[in-house]
Image 1 (cartoon, rainbow, N blue to C red):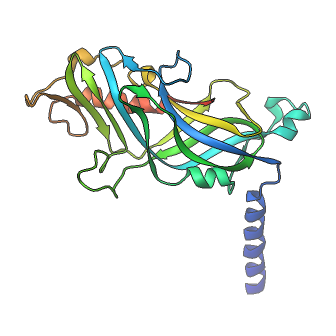
Image 2: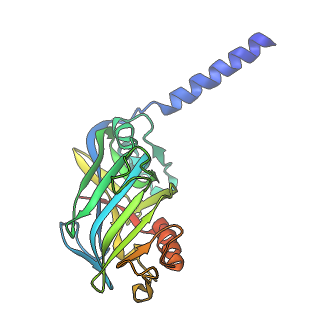
Length: 246
C-alpha cells in the first residue's frame, strides 16, 4: 500500500509538471503598463479627469498571470467557444513580469510606458492578465511609495491632492475584444489604467482638507475625512484596467 501511495503521488506530481510545460511555439514579448483615458490612444498625454489634474501615478505590481488561446488552435479554424484558455506558466515573460516592482505610469503630468517584464511566451491571442498590487515595504521612509501600492498625486481646484492605498488585491485586466490581443513576433502587451474608469462616480468637488494643512488627502484612515471617495476609487480599481496591444 505504501509503495502504491508513493507511486500515485509521484505520477500525480509528474502529471502536474507536464501540464505546466509549454508546447506551443513561443516568441519574445514585453508587458508594460501605462495610464490613459479609455477614449484616448496610447500615447504620452496629459491626464485630467473632471476636477482632478493628475501629475503623478505609481502602481506596484507582482504575481502576474496571463491566459491565451494558442495560435495553432486559432489557425485550425476552431471557434472561440470550443477553445480552451491556457496559462503561460513557466514562460520567461510571466516569470519576469511577476517580480515585485513599482511602476511610474504618469510623471510630470504626462502618461508614460513602464516595462513590467519581458521574455519568451507562447504565440496566440491573450484575453486577460491578472496581477496582485504590490505594497512597497522595502522602501525607506523617505520614499513616497513606502508602505503604498498605488500613489496618485495632483491638484483639485488648485489644491495639492494625494490618493494612496496599501491594498494588495488581485486585479483582472481583460482584453477589450473577445478575440484578445494577438501576440506574435515581439509584441508589446500593455496594462492600461483607464483613469476615467478609476474615477467614475467620484465627486471631487466634495473632497475635503479637514485638517487645514493645505493638502487634500484621500487615503486609508484619511485625516481629511474623505473615506467615501477613497472607498469608491478602491472599488473602481477592479474594472479600471484593460489589456491592449501597443
